[in-house]
Image (cartoon, rainbow, N blue to C red; front, top):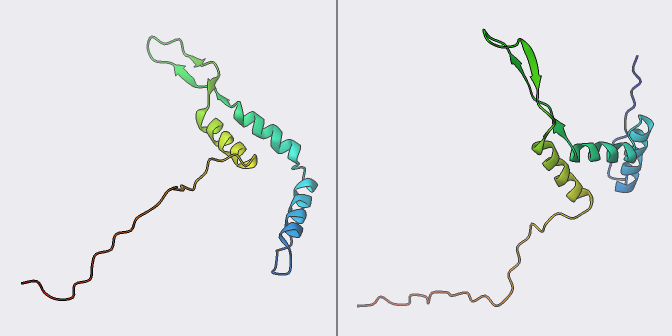
Length: 114
């Protein structure tokens, strides 16, 4: 039988720090620690994939052929994005313009031109 634990829901009286502390305690109880997360993150940064194909057919050897470890770009890119978020090093998403801005407004039409 598996043992389940419910994390108390945060209500308006619960502070964000208390909710975070209870979540971290629940993770620690099931073995998810910051060291484990960091190790898995490091593994994702070095992710590789091995491709396999079967050399069959009339003139084939009838054996499986495996590639050497190839870089898994999709996993590595996701890990880099996560690392940038964790270390608060994301590039700015906000564009600011310096200098003076002139706003031109048309003159109101008071009477019809002939």
